[in-house]
Length: 273
Image (cartoon, rainbow, N blue to C red; front, side):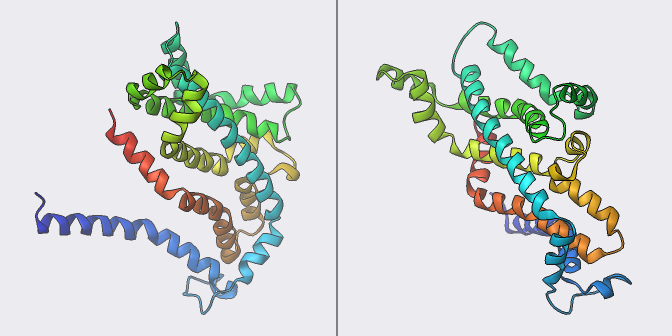
């Protein structure tokens, strides 16, 4: 059994790393709410909550347009990835057919390929099909990138599901489609929620893909918009901090909304064989 001293030592270490992790976040928040005139000369605690920094950053940086683009791309990528990953993982994890293992390893290969290795030929392919500077030029590549992880993650869940559940459903006359959507998917909500959160964060924070595939302002996403905004307001610390908070806020909201299922999915995946 764990002694009281060991527990105190564990909590002390966790508390120390928590403080280290939260220090940059607190610094950004202080800067975002701070007085712009004082922050230009050096860091100081804000005298009050200057909410005007957020509205000015939102207006100057055109983040309304960028936020809409990012939401559209992220929702499309997450939705398509989730559906395709569930279908492919169910086939590879539950069904048995020739070549299933080889097909799964091809998906795993997608996790090992660096994005930089395929970005240039991918750009020329999409330009040939006139998909650059469009939403499809952002949605299709990011869906393909996320699908490798999604299939790997969901296949692990399907293979850890008790076979007796699937066999009992088949004895009752349930088809493969019914077993998937009526039994396994409801049981796998924590795993699916974890995948949704991870894919959403990847898609929302994607910068390099948007930088290469998009050249017009109308299709910029928020990470790309923040980079241009930083170039125009490099000396205005308060506006940059406020813009960073605005961009990070949707990820925080999604995580908080799915926090319980996200943690449950991570713990379930770590304890099942």
